[in-house]
Length: 226
Image 1 (cartoon, helix red, strand yellow):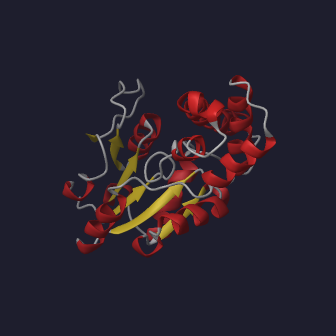
Image 2 (image 1 turned 60 degrees about the horizontal axis):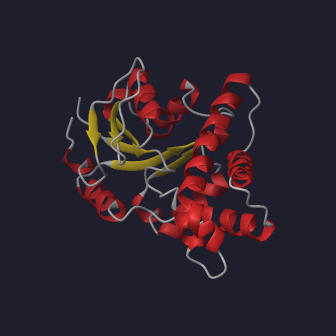
Image 3 (image 1 turned 90 degrees about the vertical axis):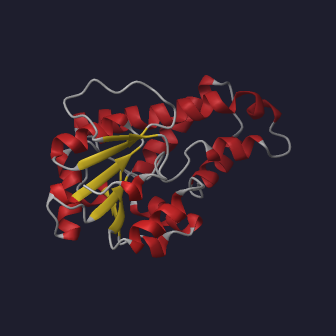
């Protein structure tokens, strides 16, 4: 079945989730952060995801911005960083994350091919609006879909349902792209064709679904035809 749309996870896929800690670490007076920022960024992202999974399982849903703050608080404490101004700065930068360098050209190529494009993310509608605006890619997206609409985080099937509802397409007509192996696998089990962007070269998750394509970055997405 021809692929008529390409839908992307946001954080870690289109937007560089390490950018906030990396940029803050380069600012004057951030010497302590500069020595630990990679570990902080990794802990922040890991806890953000873990908390989203646990909230999905227990039914204790909340705004993803709260999950993001909770993950950061854990990561800061783990590194012994207690400066409230640093916390505020990191959260500010997270609302303005950089897109990966290949993103604009990749999205333009998809649009030239006549494919619809969009985002499906755990991020709240406000977070996604800020990120899309900061990256300057709003005119390259047909839809930006947040789990806010269903009140549960991925990989709940109700989240993936949002894509077909918004675009009036069957799952087999959609390529779903994520940098999270678990997300790509779950979306494949749901019925999407999926591409896993494995930037770190980590092993594939042992899950029922397996992604159809594995790429090191997003530049090859327009070459996927069916």
